[in-house]
Length: 407
Image (cartoon, rainbow, N blue to C red; front, side):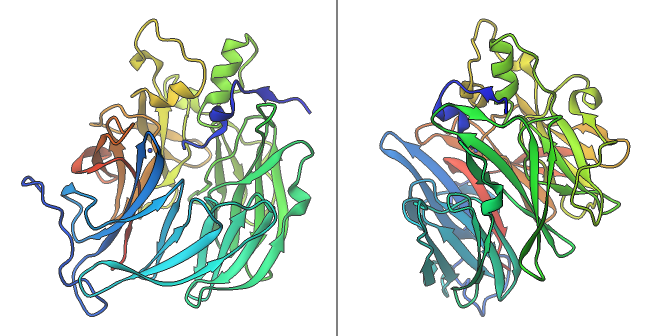
C-alpha cells in the first residue's frame, strides 16, 4: 500500500494547543456547595519537558494561575464526568480519579493501572457511557478497556487486533458516541519510516454488546479525526491530512496532494457513503481544513474546525512540516453539515496556531490564542455559536487543553 512519507517523527505527533489578575478559585466548592465549578487543564512546555496542570475554578474569567493546580509530568490527559475529574498519567498507564473537596481543591479518590504489552502512558481516547461504564482506547495494545468510572475497576476488554496493519502503529483517536455506537478514528502510522496510510478510517463499536460492528474506510482523503453528528443522524468525518501535514509534504515532493474533505457514514450503517464527498476548500473560498471538528454546543448538525490561510504566513518562510503548526495562520469556520455543507468564517476572531483546538462548555467553544512555547501565555477566547463570533474570556499560562463543567 502506498503512503505519503513524512520528514521526521515529530511530524506524526498530534496537534498535538478578572482585571485584577486574581484566580477565581472556589472557596466552598465541595459536594454541598452551590454555584458553577469548572475543571481546567493546561499544558505547560519547558526545556525539561511538558506537564499537565489541572485545577478547579468558579469563573471562566480573569487570570487563571497555576498556584493550586495538580501537576502531572508528561503528555498527560484530562477528562471529567458526573462531577469527577479523571487524569491519565503521561509517564505510566494509570488513570486517576479526583473529587473536589470543600475548598474546591482536587483530591485523589481512586486509581487503576492498565498495564499491557507496549502500553507506556495514557491514550487520548476515552468515552463515558454511564456512571458504571466507560471505554478507554489503547492503541498500543489495539484493545478497548471497559471500566467502571465510579468504582474505577476494569470490567471487560474489546479486542481490536483485526485493525492492525503490518508495518504500522494503529492509533485510536478521539471517539464520538452516538445512538449506542462509538465511532473512533483509526490512524495507521509508522514512526520509523515516517509514513501514514492514505485513507480515512473509522471503527464502529456497539456499546450494548461491546463488539466491533465494522470499519468504514475511504481512500479519497487522508487521516480521520473526531467525528460529528449531522442533523439527519449521519456521522460526518473530516479527513484533514493529519493537521494538513500530508498536503504540505506532497507539495514539497512535487506530487499531487489529496484534498481535505468531509465524508459521511449514513445513520445505522458501517460504511462511508460512496456518493457523498465535500472538498472543504470548495465551500470555504479555497481554504483547506487543518484540524478536527468540534460539535457546536446545543446545535445538532453544526460543527467548527480550523482552516489554514496561507496568506497569514510571512513571506520567505519555508514550511517543511510540523513547523506549520506554530504559525498563527488558522481560523475557525462554522460548518452546517448535510447534503449541502454551508461554511461560514467565525468573525470576529484572531488568527491562532493549531494548539489543542477547542473545548465546549456552557454553550461556548473555548480556544487559546498566543505564544505558548516554553511557558508562554494564552488568551483564551470564547466562541459564541449564537453570534458566530469570538471574544477574549480569560488568560492562563501554557496551552489550554480542556475545560469541563463539574456542576
